Image (cartoon, rainbow, N blue to C red; front, side, top):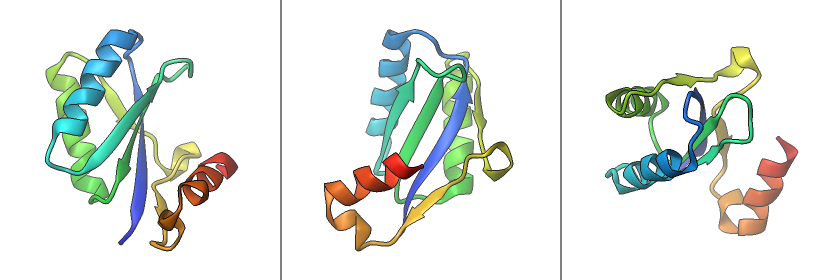
Length: 103
């Protein structure tokens, strides 16, 4: 099993809207979690879990578009990547936090 994080640039700048979208993403039958970093100039949306990157990108873009917003995947060319962790690292919360902090 691989744990992945997909990162999107968005045009969402309102905390209430961001929370509503996070709630919708969490309610999807994808088994993923989501969060926004509205302090970042790109209003970053992070989606993490065990998923297929291509279909997740399409679903996130479609979801935000249906709400009148834009989601642009930030990939390796932009200095971001889809992160993959081995299952043993996911065994502890400390391991996850350490991995995310070194990025």
